[in-house]
Image (cartoon, rainbow, N blue to C red):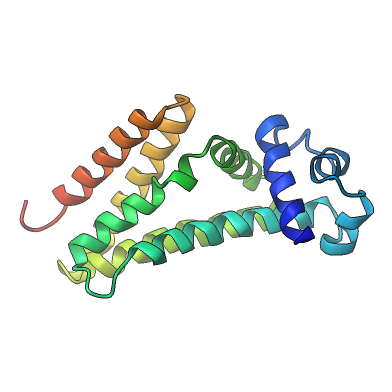
Length: 186
């Protein structure tokens, strides 16, 4: 319970202050816990930041797994992947600001870069799995790469424009249209 309390406080602090300005004190105050508890559970601020990124990655994975049905066709699965990446969790203001902070810092922090790479690879492999059922392998690889870039780009554009629910819905719809345009039937 305290671990999650600290992760939630970290997400809140990063969303409000940014990653650089987030301190052990800003986190512990938000969590109403002593700053020593962070060392006890996570070792240091970086350990807590890493745990927070892992929590966001896990939430995204859970969102996708909860929406994908075993009976879903490959095309339906592609649409569910898009939806998961534009889900309520992914467009929550605290989450979006935190993702952006982590993405920016991942260029300078090896551990965060590794976690971002895991996230990018997961999106790509989920897309590739479905595309391979619908087209030859080389075309599927290309479609998965293009689709992952389009999903990330549209999500980023919506976030940076401080989008409301309608803008996120438009971005999701554009991503779906794009993925569908890559399918053999088009």
